[in-house]
Each structure stands twice: as structure tokens, then as C-alpha cells.
Picture (cartoon, rainbow over the protein chains, first blue to last red):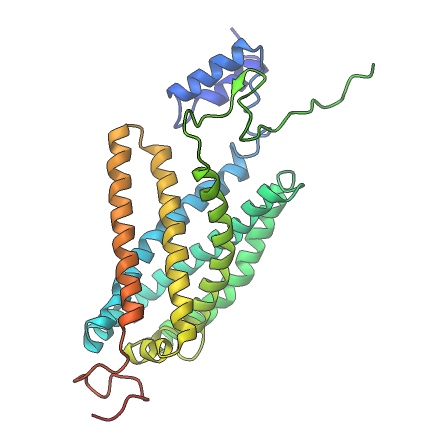
Length: 163
Length: 161
């Protein structure tokens, strides 16, 4: 049997990391019963595939990375309560060049998460948000470059600037 | 009658029990709006956190000597001012709750077994509660001029020993 357009569209729905999960199978069964052609092609949905999905993946990955940094960052700052020496000793590690690159990555992640978060808010609250989600992603990436490049120039100059 | 070019699809609202035979209200017997408030919180706190964190990063990494300027004296100088104490306290709570709720969502999405989800979330809430407690205590009980500290390490406004 040649997979026609409808059949390949159905495959879109059940392959990938969620393949075989009960929820997907149940949804597919429901849709078949109702005589629906399954609309989950990568072009046709808001979040599945392409920019919509990858911006969501990046939002999760940056979010989790920032969360774990935050846990560590509160604890290292808490050392001010132990003694000036303890705090200065630990914070000195933030000043070495390798950590400096880590800070650059952290800020890049925060700036993406921030601007893409605004995009998500616009998708949810602005009446034309969903329609313009892809254009807004390009906006996010442009703003990201505008914010991150000057930051990197200044920060890397400080980190590698021979202090 | 003219055939519509595009089918209009009704957007499911949280009160709808079903649209076209598909059940959208998945909350079962629970009748609270927790998930709606969590969703709203992520958006409101997100906007505030952009201001707070961008300000924090700018002051700590871009001004003066950037990361090289950060030491006990720098933190002591900042937290001697109630403005920065308040700033950091609000930032701590907004960010920790925002992050905890985000990780909760990720756990709910990927951990399939009830027991795995339960323990991961228990661990998450304990860790977050601990961090919030420690962070809040530090901001409120911090002394920029601890007795007996090396005078060269404390802020310049501290009285000479």
C-alpha cells in the first residue's frame, strides 16, 4: 500500500519520542472514530515540528539550566553569612576564564529564555500572536543577538582583560 | 449557501467538557484553578524577572570591573542599601517559584510512573523550600561588618576595629 497524504499525516502523530504512548494512541483512535483526518503535519500546527517546536525545546533546556545555576548561586551567595574569607574564596572561582565562558553561556541562555518568554506571552494574549509566532521567533533571535553581542564584548574583555 | 473557504475551529475553553466529542476538561473531579494560576504566574513573574535579572546582571557584570569587582565588600555595600535587599529578595522568590513550577511541569511531562513523579516532585519542593529559606535568612540576617573580620575584606564604610 502506497502511503497517501492522509496516511503519512497519521504517521506524524505517532512517531518520535512519544511513539507508542497510550495518550497518543487514544487520541489517534478518537480522531479516526470521528472521521478526522489527522492534522498534525509539521506545517499545520502551532507547536509541532520546525521553529515552533525547537523554540519550545530551547526554552525548556535553557530554563532547566538556569534553575540549576540558581540553586548553586543562592548557596554560594549564602557564604557571605559564613565569613568574608569563605565568600571571597568561592567567588574567586567565578573569575577564572573557564567560568567566565560559563557565565557568557548562562547570560546567553537567560536572554533567550527572557525574550522567548515574551514571545510566548504574546502568543497567548495577543489576538494575532499565534499567527505571527514564527515572525516573532525571528524577532527574538534578532533581539538576542543585539543584547548578547555587546554583553560578550564587555564581559570577555573583563574576563580575559589581564586583571 | 456558500461553502466557507476555511473551517472555523472553536477554541476549547477550560469550562468546556467537550468539543466535537473530544473531552477537553481533563481535570477530573478536582475543582480548583491551580493550573490556571500557575500558568498566569509564569507570565506575570516572567515579565518582572526580566527587569530584575537584567538589572542584576548589568550592575554585577557590566558596571565597573564586572565580575572581578565581586567580593564580600561588594555584596556588603549592596545589601547595606534596603533598595538592593528588596530587589534581591523579590528576585529570589519570584525566580525560585518560577523555576520550581517550570521543573514541575517538565517532571509531569516526562516521568510516566506515578511514584517516580511523586518522588521527583517531593525532592524538587524540598530543595526549593530549602534554597528559599536559606536565601531569605541570608538577606535578612546579613551583617556587612562582621565582628572580628579582616578589615581589608569588609566594605569601606565599616568602622575601624
